[in-house]
Image 1: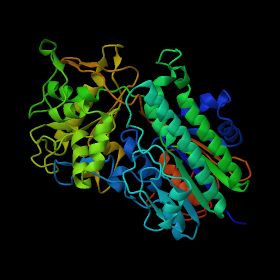
Image 2: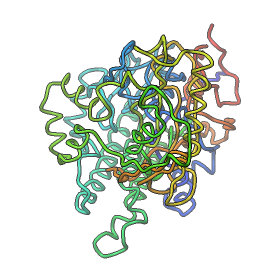
Image 3: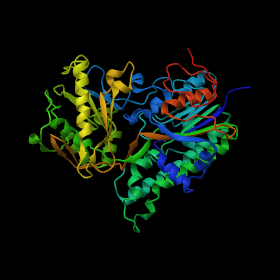
Image 4: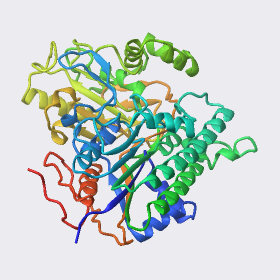
Length: 518
């Protein structure tokens, strides 16, 4: 008797678990509701609450950013304090490449945040309709992409960020997302039916785009004749994806094991990104000597963006994208890296902020022996400074609510290990996300003031969602404590493929079908 399954794996990019459960219970997501009732479901711990951009690469390889070498798409160049932009090339051993080498027939369609694998036994389409995936639109075999473009056309929404904040633009965005889901459903259904697959893995970017752009339309817009049609906009997208899931499950047939998941979720995009430089100034970290707290020294600092950031904010978003597409790629990447952060970190600073997702403040100590012109010696002095910075973040208060402005602190030395540790920051602080932050109070230092401005109304939360059902409709999974890095070993075990020992996750199946590779 074989332990091998056929696997239908569906990734809902940044779909929010609370919304899935709410709308399933209310009858809006019947196919997910049925799947949840006949299988096993749980929240899926993010592989990287500190680094949302790390989520997908770590899911694919079951490794952390210190192993794969990427935590964000803008990082320090090794051995320097200069920032540069990274693409989404495959990192680590992606599970479908491992399955392909073991002879399993695989189809991988629009897996988020990755370019084509070096080789695949089957087919792959990369970045036909993905969210913010920095790689060429391509396919294996190469002629497949042209066939898709001939039969279906280009994906209708090249980027979900290129719009103004008018009701008509939101309506247009909403309709293009729904059109994209309908087009994706037809494409995936035809590919799924084209031949028998051992693994069919597809991604839906629309839950990600809708979460970023339509989050505020659920409640915050006034219920009037002009905007009432948009109040179900986010739910409409989830409903359309649910219909596509039902169609794919039916086409896959009763002998397929089905897993639907999101690697992380969504929450309101409330953060203090533009207040961070002012805080580092108050604390003395932007210079060589940190400042100790004292009530008599408290003052108000107005957070300011530099000239390049202000220039970017003044240029209409469509003009920005026009320039982006017109300039050579090397210049485009340099401009993006500059607009999203700085050209380089300040070598005179005790510690400096690093580019990262807006909801996570990210700090790197200017460390002697690691960073050029480092100030702080490794060992006890470094540890003590990290603890001191963590304490300052934990003390922060949002004056609008009287509540802590920070939801949690992570130190990389406690969470990460691998050959690329020197590329990572040293600690992160997650903004609470409970209310807008246009000012933040640091006891003994003072208050930093600045407008809370963000084009997106939804941002990434630290938990995803997973529902799994075996080919007979019975749950054969143990999802207790499930993490995103557990998906790759789970899929390999279902395919009866040995799990590489470098993978950090565990198989979520109860059936010990495969052994660890040596």
